[in-house]
Image 1 (cartoon, rainbow, N blue to C red):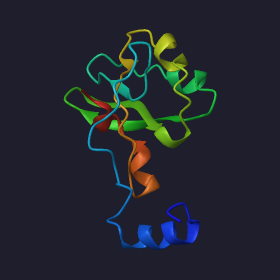
Image 2 (cartoon, rainbow, N blue to C red):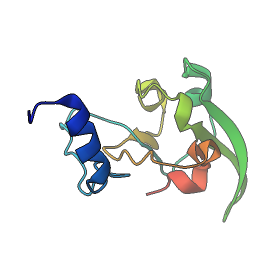
Image 3 (tube, rainbow, N blue to C red):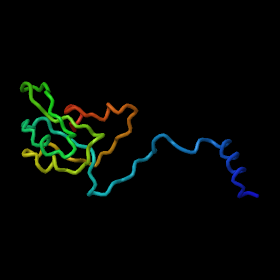
Image 4 (spheres, rainbow, N blue to C red):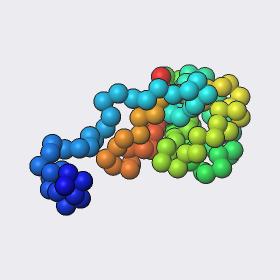
Length: 121
């Protein structure tokens, strides 16, 4: 009688919530895994190589005001990124790198567009 699916359904309605919005602890990643992009704005030379190589057209070059004046730097649309690493490989000063970070939980899709200032450190 305990295996009755209808009885199980009614019991589950009375239970506390069975899912959590976000996990309390994050999974540890293998050392080979790479996700979030990081930009070193000091060494970026505004060459646009990352924008040209991106297969998904995820990278757009935008103007950023720095201490040395206005430069163009990559803005990343994380929602379209394949995390292929081509942008990292083609970057001459190696200022754009893939890291182990993977915080992609957002309520608004527009939060997945990361300006150069948001990609720092």
